[in-house]
Length: 280
Image (cartoon, rainbow, N blue to C red):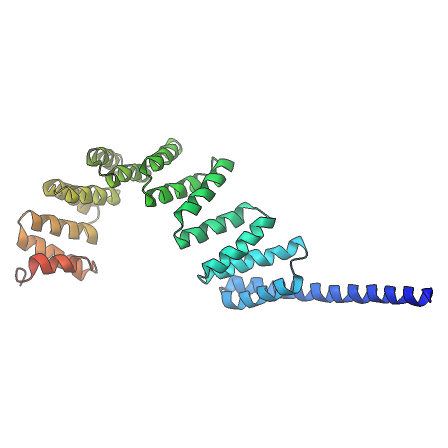
């Protein structure tokens, strides 16, 4: 009786080992196919295979969790952010790796969740304070959240390492958004002096002057910007608007029409308000 029972146990162990080996073979084959589909951009096809892998493996081994991470990537690529977040959170619970936390950051970004982005960024930057890309990301989140003083702190940190005019112009923007026009203009003028070819700075300065109804000042920045980029549609629109407000209606409407015909749709409302009957 003992020998018969022992034989059954051995047979059962052999059967289990065989079935387990078969299962792992299927998982490995599905993984190769799923990863190939991901590389081809067939996220729907890859998703179906990752579903099979996760169901078959039941995430019994550490290696199986990679399918969970890859499924999160597939969901993210398909714009299914809630499902991507569910999977990546489960993965991070087992493996709190930076690449997975970065994926979670991108999900938060797509969801427009500034609070969670900020919390995650603060933790990642504390762990990697020299990662300037993360600091730049935090600047954008802080500005979206209206935390301009904190954004300036990070921008100055970046400028200490990368003193580039484009980055300095963002410092001016923080004052602009705080409605501190004098401080903003001082910085924009410094940036223009450092790099006259940076057209975006003329746009910032002109927009600020228009907001302040300083149309002659706006036209000064606009003309300098157009010297760098004569076909810039936004500058052409700004010039048209500033001229109309300066009572040079005919020339202003001509430029507003030009901007509209170039695809600047916002010019339509201004054409209706100021120009119908003027440019004909």
